[in-house]
Image 1 (tube, rainbow, N blue to C red):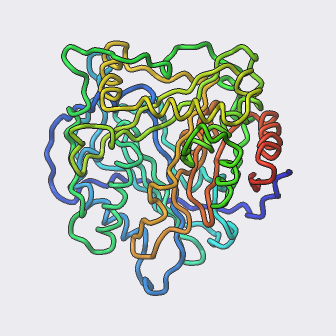
Image 2: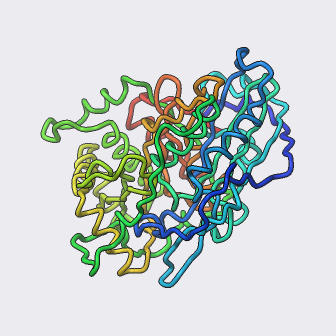
Image 3: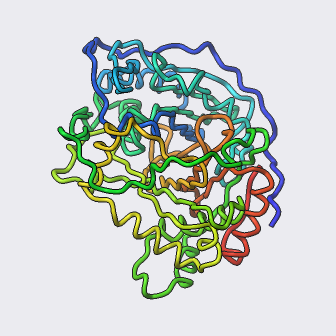
Length: 449
C-alpha cells in the first residue's frame, strides 16, 4: 500500500534567542549521584517529545510561551537537579552538579495553523527540526542543559511544545511527572501535587556486586548494514492501528500461549516484519529488546515521586530464519518469556552488571527496541488550554534529526488508536510496509512522509 502524499505545506519558524531559565528561588548547590541504572550507556541520550494544542478562547489574552516559561522556573525549584549539569567521575560514574544554571528555553512563532497538520496527528511531523530544539552535541552531554523546551505559537492561536529531556535523569514515567508538574503550576497551582524524590541510591549496585542473570541484551556484536546507513538514506513512517485490530491479531495465535498483552502481540509482529525487511543472514541472531518499566517488580517499592530510571531491556533472541519462517505465535512466545524474566532481583542484578562491566550499551546491530508510551498520559497534559491534540514521542529514533541508525520502534497514542513509528533505510521500508500489510491483511493503514 503506497503512502499518501503529504499535504502539510512547508512553513517558517522564527525562533527568539535561546535563554537559560533558572529556578525561581534559590536551590541547594550540591552534587547528586545518579543510580547505576540511570547512567548506563544505553540511556545517554535525550528523549524527544512533542505536544500540539488547540486555540482556546477562554485563554484569550494569555501567552502560552509566557505561561510555560514562568511555570518552568517555578517547577525547577522542586526539580532543581534539572537546572544543573552532568559530571563524570571515575569509572564513568555520572552525577549531577546542582548549579542552578537552568534549563534551555526557546520561544518561537510559526506561520502555520494546527489544521494544516491534518485531521489525525502522528509522526513523522513536517519541519520537526524547527519545532523541537536540536541538542547541540547529544553525545557530549557533560556541561550541557539537561532539559530543552521550545514553545511555538501557531497562526491559529494554538501552540506546539517541544521537549527534550536527558534520559539519564528520568525514564518516561519520571519525565511525565516533571511535565505534569509544569502543567499544574501553569494552571495556577503553587506546587506540583507529587513532590519529587531523588533517592537514586535505591537502584545502585550492591556491595559486593553479584550478577545473577545472563543478560543477552548486552551482548557485544559486530556492526551491521543498518547501523552504518547514512541518515539521508533513512525513511521515517508511521502505521496506525485501530482499537479492534489487536484482537484480530490475537485470533491468529494458538490457545497454548494463554492471555497475551497488546504490547506482546504488536512487538512480536513488528520485530518479525522488520527483520524480514532488513534481510540479515538467515543464521544470524536477531533480538527484540522490550523496554519494561520495572517499578511494579521492586520490593520494597520505590517511593512515590521517584523520577529516576526504573527500566530494563529484557531480550527475546532467535535466528533470522526461525523468526521469519515460524508463525507469529513463535515470536509472541519469545516476547512473553523475555518479559517474564523481569523481577526485583533482575533489576538489582542489572545495576551490578553496569558496575562490573563498565556501563554497557545494548547492541545496535540486528536489534529491535520497542517502546510503548501509549498509556504514559502525554495527551492528558493540560497547561490551561485543554488536553493535547497529540502528545508523545516526536519520532522514531533519538533526537530531532533522522538518525544514522535507529533500532527503535515507538508505539504512541493517537486519536482512535495507536501510531507505530519506525525509521528504516528506504529500500527496507518498502519491504517492511508490504510485509506488514501482507502479515496483517489490511489491519494497518499506512501513512508517512
